[in-house]
Length: 101
Image (cartoon, rainbow, N blue to C red; front, side, top):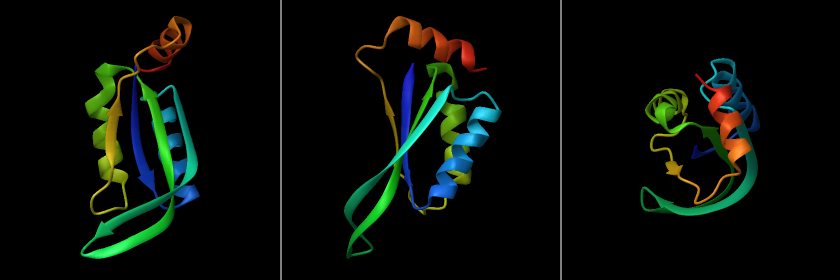
């Protein structure tokens, strides 16, 4: 199992992306929460609220999910990072595997 993370600017966009990936069985679960981001973009300091999204899927779907996220993302340069957990409850990992195609 892997976790693909991204950030996005609006609640509806987060829900729409997660719904699309769930409806197509590309992820077993998607979560999001509000974060405060600070970064430099085009030589300007930006401090803003964003939503961090975590998408839970199997490793074999990584490229496909990343491509969908990139195609649907409103940012010029989205954060897309893949996390490989050190440990996952085996039953949870099996559920993720069985929930995705």
